[in-house]
Amino acid sequence: MPISYRSPHKFSVGDLVCLSYDEYRQYGYGIVLWSHSNGEYEVYWFSDKLIDVETAFDILPAELPTEPK
Image 1 (cartoon, helix red, strand yellow):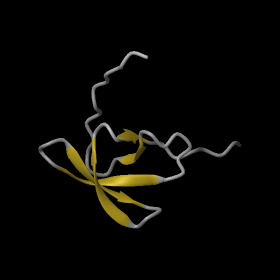
Image 2 (cartoon, rainbow, N blue to C red):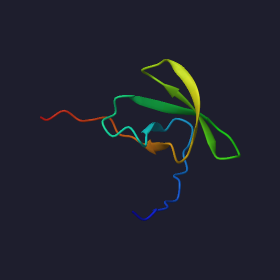
Image 3 (cartoon, rainbow, N blue to C red):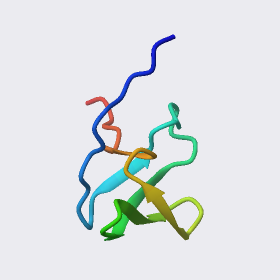
Image 4 (cartoon, rainbow, N blue to C red):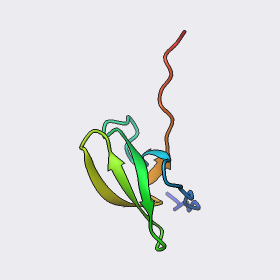
């Protein structure tokens, strides 16, 4: 299987994110609190109520699911 490379997303403080490898969003959502110059981000995870340092490759922009009308 070939390796595919993607350019990491540039996040801003306040962006809603999820883990890139969490397909079913079981880990939940987080919000970017701080961005470091080395490309890492401090993310507050709502489900754990903890702050973790994540790389731009580990997180993706997220949107809250919408309910059908």
